[in-house]
Image (cartoon, rainbow, N blue to C red; front, side, top):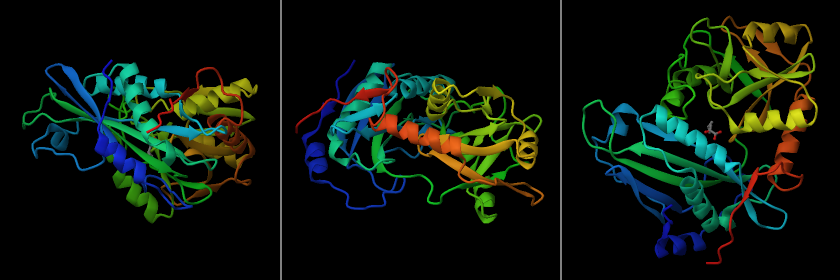
Length: 359
Ligand code: COI
């Protein structure tokens, strides 16, 4: 593993940096440092901690034309003893490499990925917020930097990690969902499971429609039958039907969310029945009308858990929950946040301590 080289100007910059804002929002602030590494001649070269700043890219870099790019989203939490811990970073490291494989990009050894994350966290320790529900959000990403117009995999790449002290993703209390019945986001055999910009780019046209219609998130259905729930544009979907926690089974068109996985683990540990299946949107809407589906929520690293208040369909029909927020979603949210912030015992290996560096 290559140790990250620390540039003194980066340390000087971050030492002097502070944020004075009671409403952090999501991604509004970034730490003034970043990790940067290059891949060339078939291997990862140096990893550096440098001052945050613009990336120098040739206009013909392949990422700018063919979208060869992947990223991750992960969080670091302040603990009651003032130490900081990363939440399940090995799952992000593994998923990053699964995305890399699908996008014909080089993998980063898991210990190298986690070490780079740990270094930017350690030097941003004073920027990790302490209020419950807030965290330092890490955004590791990799882009194809080889210059050329030919459509073929790049042989050169850049890996970067930036860090953002963040609060909640949604400004409102509950999420209004627009059911996208026309466009599709990804098809079987495609790139849906990979965390790559193309999946998010494919959602943006519908985002505008969703917002104009007074909703917050687009719900994507399967590409073949336009019937089964896949996920939201940036988060997974769960609901409670007949007292069981239900969510679409992960396939190659759905992102395998770390928060989703953690919620299912917490629910099982609390003896809540978890059902993973092909979940049709019409089945969910009918179950809401019949009073059998009592709540639904979205979950993701950025979003944590946010209750859904209503669904808007293409024909203008609105289906609302009677009780918002639902009880189970809020209980799971509290439990997850308590674990992340060291207020409740964490399952083995969920919290990765970031070493303390005095600098
Ligand atoms: C995350 O939750 O980390 C994501 O990357 C999704 C995006 C909506 C911020």
